[in-house]
Length: 397
Image 1 (cartoon, rainbow, N blue to C red):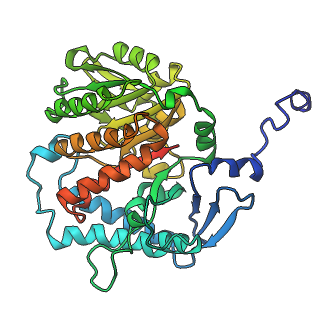
Image 2 (image 1 turned 90 degrees about the horizontal axis):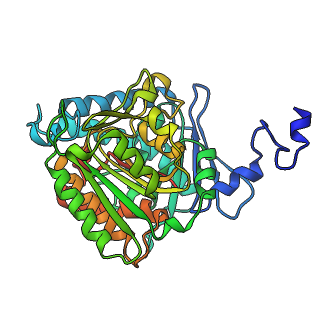
Image 3 (image 1 turned 60 degrees about the vertical axis):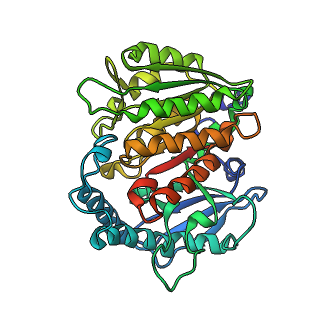
């Protein structure tokens, strides 16, 4: 070990990263690491331009509350028969999503996250104020059951005694990262492909053994229309029977960005067997990892449950979106649970519209692009239609 560490560039081989190295991850805005335990709960804030890591106590938060919050959220989703993209759109929910009992499950969870975590953090960082212009970008690095709860959407939504600025959405643009190391790597992998990318869109309207996704056709048309207005970006699409595993892998290797509009599968017993359903079968994360995806930009995973964690190993980020980040994509847009097929084209259209706003498509604006797109979706479906807009998340740089 001493001999290895004597080599140039290997001085810290297998040593824990120093705080001076970790603070470099905060390039786009503050990073908040939340630690949950039975003894106490705390947050650590890494702030751009500050070499010191700030401690924020979370005295009101108890780990048992998060377990109950997760249970409530799962119950609310189950009552609405949310299983996969397409079925949610086509089936009539078992209960009316506006029924007070269902809406209450969502609201109690979002209020808890606001009161116990987001409010103390934003207050300490002096981010609790109405500001004109773009809100700051904040990245959450969560552990335990918190990694499966929607911090990015927390707040009060219907309580009449609270004003409109008691929702995190009004104060910051939220992203997630599975680890600080993943964000450091994503930030280091900068390239010209950030601003003039080649984009491949995969669309699977009809997949053998899966429900039909008719809105994938409109979704890809929206993307093509937005990208075609850019002089530097290139666009190609692979659809239906042409979407084979080998064809998609080759396209991912030769293009900077990828957009996958299809069914997905998360295997909680073997993360490598999670993946995307294509015409000739499952394109697994294990197979994707075997390829060389260096210096990639945005992976837009317009499928179901691509950022859903596993409660059996909650301290590990084993979902599909995290795997795409580790595979070489610096920014990932994904979903925590199933989405309505009809909502996907609107989100895609508004995301790519924002990304191309000044003629340069930069993946580093993807978190803000999703934030803007969700504002449009909230206006269309109503901000208390949590099951529709809350699942969309941004991960990475």
